[in-house]
Length: 207
Image (cartoon, rainbow, N blue to C red):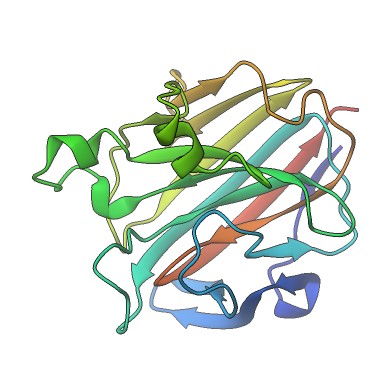
Protein backbone atom coordinates (compact mmCIF):
# COMPACT_ATOMS: atom_id res chain seq x y z
CA UNK A 1 0.00 0.00 0.00
CA UNK A 2 1.38 3.38 -1.04
CA UNK A 3 0.72 6.41 1.16
CA UNK A 4 1.68 10.03 0.54
CA UNK A 5 2.13 11.46 4.01
CA UNK A 6 0.68 14.79 4.99
CA UNK A 7 3.45 17.25 5.75
CA UNK A 8 1.45 19.38 8.14
CA UNK A 9 3.16 19.77 11.53
CA UNK A 10 0.15 18.15 13.20
CA UNK A 11 0.82 14.94 11.26
CA UNK A 12 4.14 14.44 13.08
CA UNK A 13 5.12 13.71 16.66
CA UNK A 14 8.24 15.72 17.58
CA UNK A 15 10.76 13.45 19.32
CA UNK A 16 13.31 15.83 20.89
CA UNK A 17 12.70 18.12 17.91
CA UNK A 18 10.70 21.13 16.82
CA UNK A 19 8.40 20.72 13.82
CA UNK A 20 6.78 23.53 11.84
CA UNK A 21 5.51 24.46 8.39
CA UNK A 22 7.95 26.31 6.15
CA UNK A 23 7.12 28.50 3.15
CA UNK A 24 10.13 28.21 0.85
CA UNK A 25 10.50 29.88 -2.56
CA UNK A 26 10.17 26.42 -4.13
CA UNK A 27 6.95 25.68 -2.24
CA UNK A 28 5.73 24.44 1.14
CA UNK A 29 7.79 22.07 3.24
CA UNK A 30 8.06 20.66 6.74
CA UNK A 31 10.93 22.06 8.84
CA UNK A 32 12.52 19.95 11.59
CA UNK A 33 15.24 21.02 14.06
CA UNK A 34 16.69 19.50 17.23
CA UNK A 35 15.31 20.82 20.52
CA UNK A 36 17.04 18.48 22.98
CA UNK A 37 20.33 16.54 23.11
CA UNK A 38 21.74 19.42 21.10
CA UNK A 39 25.40 18.35 21.11
CA UNK A 40 24.94 14.57 21.19
CA UNK A 41 25.25 12.61 17.96
CA UNK A 42 23.06 9.78 16.62
CA UNK A 43 20.28 10.15 19.17
CA UNK A 44 16.50 9.78 18.97
CA UNK A 45 15.98 13.24 17.48
CA UNK A 46 13.38 13.02 14.74
CA UNK A 47 9.86 13.88 13.69
CA UNK A 48 7.70 10.75 13.73
CA UNK A 49 4.80 10.39 11.31
CA UNK A 50 1.65 9.81 13.32
CA UNK A 51 -0.34 6.64 12.67
CA UNK A 52 2.18 4.99 10.33
CA UNK A 53 3.40 1.41 10.77
CA UNK A 54 6.11 0.10 8.49
CA UNK A 55 8.28 -3.00 8.30
CA UNK A 56 9.17 -3.84 4.69
CA UNK A 57 8.83 -1.72 1.58
CA UNK A 58 9.97 1.67 0.27
CA UNK A 59 10.43 5.05 1.90
CA UNK A 60 10.86 7.97 -0.50
CA UNK A 61 11.60 11.55 0.53
CA UNK A 62 12.45 14.83 -1.13
CA UNK A 63 14.59 16.79 1.28
CA UNK A 64 17.37 19.30 1.88
CA UNK A 65 19.18 20.82 4.83
CA UNK A 66 20.89 24.00 5.95
CA UNK A 67 23.17 24.87 8.83
CA UNK A 68 21.65 26.92 11.61
CA UNK A 69 23.26 30.31 12.34
CA UNK A 70 24.68 28.98 15.62
CA UNK A 71 25.79 25.61 14.22
CA UNK A 72 29.12 24.38 15.64
CA UNK A 73 32.09 23.78 13.33
CA UNK A 74 31.48 20.04 13.32
CA UNK A 75 27.89 20.32 12.09
CA UNK A 76 27.41 18.63 8.73
CA UNK A 77 23.81 19.37 7.76
CA UNK A 78 22.72 15.95 9.02
CA UNK A 79 19.38 14.91 7.53
CA UNK A 80 17.79 11.51 6.98
CA UNK A 81 15.10 8.95 7.66
CA UNK A 82 14.08 6.78 10.62
CA UNK A 83 12.27 3.45 10.24
CA UNK A 84 10.97 0.60 12.42
CA UNK A 85 10.89 2.84 15.48
CA UNK A 86 9.31 1.27 18.56
CA UNK A 87 6.47 2.93 20.44
CA UNK A 88 8.80 4.32 23.09
CA UNK A 89 11.11 5.88 20.46
CA UNK A 90 13.96 4.05 22.20
CA UNK A 91 14.87 1.71 19.31
CA UNK A 92 14.97 2.31 15.57
CA UNK A 93 17.03 2.08 12.39
CA UNK A 94 18.23 5.21 10.58
CA UNK A 95 20.12 6.49 7.57
CA UNK A 96 21.29 10.07 7.13
CA UNK A 97 23.43 12.28 4.91
CA UNK A 98 26.12 14.86 5.64
CA UNK A 99 25.80 17.47 2.87
CA UNK A 100 28.87 19.47 3.93
CA UNK A 101 30.88 16.31 3.17
CA UNK A 102 29.48 16.28 -0.37
CA UNK A 103 30.90 17.18 -3.75
CA UNK A 104 32.44 20.53 -2.74
CA UNK A 105 34.25 19.24 0.34
CA UNK A 106 38.03 19.64 -0.19
CA UNK A 107 38.92 16.96 2.36
CA UNK A 108 38.92 13.42 0.82
CA UNK A 109 38.52 11.81 4.24
CA UNK A 110 35.39 13.82 4.97
CA UNK A 111 34.03 13.15 1.47
CA UNK A 112 34.22 9.43 2.23
CA UNK A 113 31.76 10.06 5.07
CA UNK A 114 28.93 11.54 3.00
CA UNK A 115 26.23 9.25 4.41
CA UNK A 116 25.73 7.03 7.43
CA UNK A 117 23.64 4.09 8.65
CA UNK A 118 23.16 3.81 12.40
CA UNK A 119 20.96 1.80 14.73
CA UNK A 120 19.62 3.30 17.94
CA UNK A 121 20.62 2.83 20.65
CA UNK A 122 24.30 2.03 20.67
CA UNK A 123 25.34 1.51 17.07
CA UNK A 124 26.40 5.07 16.34
CA UNK A 125 28.95 6.34 13.84
CA UNK A 126 31.39 6.64 16.74
CA UNK A 127 30.87 2.97 17.59
CA UNK A 128 31.58 1.83 14.03
CA UNK A 129 34.69 4.01 13.74
CA UNK A 130 36.04 3.20 17.20
CA UNK A 131 35.96 -0.52 16.46
CA UNK A 132 37.08 -0.15 12.84
CA UNK A 133 33.88 -1.61 11.41
CA UNK A 134 33.56 -0.65 7.71
CA UNK A 135 30.56 -0.68 5.42
CA UNK A 136 28.21 1.78 7.12
CA UNK A 137 29.34 5.01 5.41
CA UNK A 138 29.86 6.11 1.80
CA UNK A 139 30.45 9.26 -0.30
CA UNK A 140 27.37 11.21 -1.45
CA UNK A 141 27.08 13.66 -4.34
CA UNK A 142 25.06 16.34 -2.56
CA UNK A 143 25.37 19.88 -1.18
CA UNK A 144 23.84 22.00 1.54
CA UNK A 145 20.62 23.81 0.61
CA UNK A 146 20.13 21.53 -2.40
CA UNK A 147 17.08 19.32 -2.90
CA UNK A 148 17.70 15.61 -3.32
CA UNK A 149 15.56 12.50 -3.30
CA UNK A 150 16.27 9.62 -0.96
CA UNK A 151 14.80 6.15 -1.41
CA UNK A 152 15.16 3.47 1.26
CA UNK A 153 14.36 -0.11 0.22
CA UNK A 154 13.81 -2.26 3.31
CA UNK A 155 13.35 -6.04 3.18
CA UNK A 156 13.81 -8.19 6.27
CA UNK A 157 17.25 -7.53 7.71
CA UNK A 158 18.53 -5.82 4.52
CA UNK A 159 18.37 -2.14 3.56
CA UNK A 160 19.44 -0.32 0.41
CA UNK A 161 19.59 3.45 0.07
CA UNK A 162 19.39 5.31 -3.26
CA UNK A 163 20.04 8.95 -4.11
CA UNK A 164 18.33 11.00 -6.85
CA UNK A 165 16.88 8.05 -8.73
CA UNK A 166 20.18 6.28 -9.30
CA UNK A 167 20.00 2.63 -10.33
CA UNK A 168 22.96 1.89 -8.05
CA UNK A 169 22.53 2.10 -4.28
CA UNK A 170 24.48 4.69 -2.37
CA UNK A 171 24.81 2.28 0.54
CA UNK A 172 23.76 -1.32 1.18
CA UNK A 173 23.32 -2.65 4.71
CA UNK A 174 22.99 -6.44 4.44
CA UNK A 175 22.35 -7.02 8.14
CA UNK A 176 20.43 -4.35 10.05
CA UNK A 177 21.45 -4.27 13.69
CA UNK A 178 17.91 -4.91 14.92
CA UNK A 179 17.58 -7.80 12.47
CA UNK A 180 14.41 -8.36 10.48
CA UNK A 181 12.68 -6.31 13.12
CA UNK A 182 9.03 -5.60 13.81
CA UNK A 183 6.73 -3.03 12.23
CA UNK A 184 7.33 0.42 13.62
CA UNK A 185 7.21 4.12 13.04
CA UNK A 186 8.93 6.19 10.37
CA UNK A 187 10.21 9.72 10.57
CA UNK A 188 12.57 12.51 9.55
CA UNK A 189 15.93 12.46 11.28
CA UNK A 190 17.87 15.64 12.09
CA UNK A 191 21.06 16.17 14.03
CA UNK A 192 23.42 18.83 15.36
CA UNK A 193 23.24 22.36 13.99
CA UNK A 194 20.84 21.52 11.18
CA UNK A 195 17.47 22.62 9.90
CA UNK A 196 15.91 19.87 7.82
CA UNK A 197 13.28 20.45 5.13
CA UNK A 198 11.06 17.80 3.54
CA UNK A 199 8.66 18.53 0.68
CA UNK A 200 7.51 14.98 -0.06
CA UNK A 201 7.38 11.76 1.98
CA UNK A 202 5.90 8.57 0.53
CA UNK A 203 5.61 5.23 2.34
CA UNK A 204 4.99 2.01 0.39
CA UNK A 205 4.41 -0.93 2.73
CA UNK A 206 4.80 -4.41 1.23
CA UNK A 207 3.75 -6.45 4.25
